[in-house]
Each structure stands twice: as structure tokens, then as C-alpha cells.
Length: 354
Image (tube, rainbow, N blue to C red):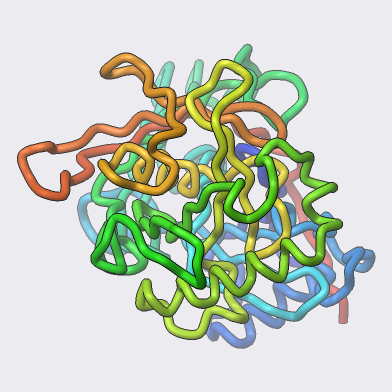
């Protein structure tokens, strides 16, 4: 049996298989078939593969040396289904991005600095650039450290992610519908794309508090049906077409904070409750809430100027920094920053199902 070189990494609150592009088939159809067999899809347990039976653990990062000047590596994200044999490149993943720079160093694509290394990553899904900075004492990646992030036990080395030119990266504009606020089936929403298309609505308008645990939300079939109808219609308004088989746009329901943060959130991908919140999803949500007149902006407890916005989610908090250019109407996003962690779990050969 011929195996494939693979590194399994936790990136942020996700887990995925990282590959060099050269180790996978160049033909997308052949590549996707191979990845489905590696991950163990379709099967709700993914018992015959390395997937973790959840969308946040059924992810793939494909990395290669940069093909154009201005950055160091190219990163293609693929979201694989669990019980359905789907492979989607319609979104990127900011959580797996947290491990791309370290993987590039480990595979020799980028030389390590003596203390810290900065890697410019082109996100092929969106065409945008992200800058990842992480520790490399002695010229080697160090995954150990004292930084904790919600949704991950223990601590690890911090990874600083800096995003620029992310607004409209999927839909073409920060406000894909042309409005800060829209009505979708009687529900007020704000549709924003600052690296991830997101539909923001008030939790109360969907009949929940917004503080429910993820498993309680998952068991509410009436709620998930409403979420699906909402995002499907919103997807059309955002110019995404038929999104019934897509994981975007994501839906985030917001409520007033109750644990010292700035806003409380519950996110669905596409209708399954997220155990926390995605990195770029969080960036888009904060961007939306900082816009005048956006749905849920009245619930935001804004921090002092220049301070990050702390998002409360189902398993903790995520701090997001947004810098606007306020000389335009609507304001433009200059940059977004988050702190994540990542850890190498294994490096070796994975054997796909035949």
C-alpha cells in the first residue's frame, strides 16, 4: 500500500491534515478522492480514516512554495464533509492557518529565524495575504508556551496572525448585499465579508437566548431548519448563489455579553453549532458589530479605542483587533489581528482507504 506524507496539526480550535502540494495528485478530482479516503469520509464516525467525526476536525491544508513574489507560501484550505462525500474550497480557515507557517518551516519551504519567524501566506481560497509570526528559538519551531486559547486544553506557543485586504475576499465587498442591515424572511440580519461571509442575527430573533450550550442547540431541529432557511436566502442576497450544499455563509447569532466580554455569540457551520467560533468568522462578526446600524451593534460593549474586542463563544473567548480607515463611507478595514496557538500532533505517512 502506498502512503502519503502527512502532518496532523491542531491549528487554533481546529485540527487538520497538512500536505505539501507536491505530495498530492495535481488533478483536483483525483486529489479530492484521495483526501476523502484519507479522512474516512463519508461516514459519521470517519472510523476508517483520520477525521475526527466533526467538521472542525475534517479539514485539510495544502501548502506549497509561493508561485508569485510578495509572499512566502501558498495555502489552500479544503473543508471535507463527514457523513457526506463533499470537498469544498469556497472558504478559507483561519484556525488551520495558525499552523501553516510552522509546517512551511518544518518542510523546508521557509528558513527559520534565530528567535522568531514571520511567514507571509497567500490564502488561495480568497487571494488575500496573512502574516504569521511564531517562535523558532535556535532555528527550530517551538510549539511549547504559556498562551491559552478558549476551546483548547493546556497552553502552547502564541502565533500572531495579521490579516490585510480581507474585506470582500469571497463576496467581492465588505457589505455583499449593499446594505448594513437586511430583512430575510422577517429576521433582521447584517451580511458581512471580511475574510469569511457571515450572516449576523440576534439570538432573540431566532427564539433563543444565545447562551445555550452547543449540544442543546444541535438538538433543536426547528432552530437548525430556521438557520438553514436564513443562510440559504442570505447567500443569494450576498451573491453566493445556491449555498444549500456549501458551508458558507456561516451564521452567527449574537446576544449581550455576560462573562466580561464585548458580545456573546453562537455560530453554525452551516447548521451544526460550532464549539467555539472560527478565526475569520470572528473577524467578520466583530467587523459587522462595529459598523453603525448593524444588527446586534446595540448589544456590543465596546472596549476602549485601540483595544481588541473579546467575543464570548460556547467554549470561552476570542480577542479580535480591527483597524478601520474612517475616511471612507462605509469605513474600510485596514487590518485585523488575532492570537492563536498551534501544535504538531504527528508527522509521518497516512494510508488511505483503498
